[in-house]
Image (cartoon, rainbow, N blue to C red):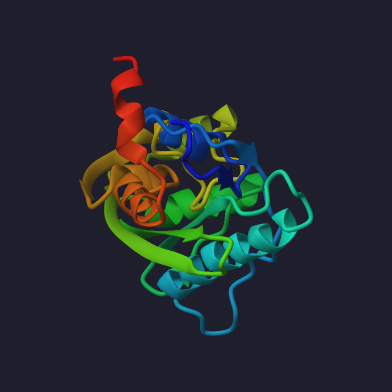
Amino acid sequence: MSGRPKLVLASASPRRLALLQQIGIDPDYLRPTTVDESPEKGELPRTLARRLARTKCEVALHAIRREPEIDGSLVLAADTVVAVGRRILPKAETLEEASACLRLLSGRSHRVYSAVCVGSSGGRVRERLAETRVRFKRLSREEIDTYLGSGEWRGKAGGYAIQGIAGSFVIKLVGSYTAVVGLPLIEASVMLESAGYPVRLAWSSVAV
């Protein structure tokens, strides 16, 4: 894809990188950003996801201005928030956090808000939000304990990874599966195309 704009993925997530590669997109550079992900007082889950994705995008745009070989690239950033009602679940880092999340999600529906932003050198930031409803089966204590022992939950919003073992917990999903994994591909590809990145040109070389 000669002549296309370069692309920077502002994320350290291997899941987001794999999802982009699934549709033939290999970012030219990885520039993870570190931002405070704490919700503001009274902040709604969808608002938090959008704010964090935009902040990550803006931080990355500012950072690459100091790198001449990258300056002018498109930047893609995303954030995913899991919530039950207005209650925002953490990205679990301890067994206690993950256990609390799983017990709360057991036998009920929750929502996953995944925001994605594409920023350009001119300062324009395109933004979209995918909202997905997920329902878990009722989890036994043994299932929760065994899942916690797997370690798959660590660092995951809501304390689970749908693309892994926790996929067996899902009774119903309404919305975007890839958004729950971490990046809504429909929204991301549409925005990249709008920003001048020729997503479809790579499809002929994608191995099946």
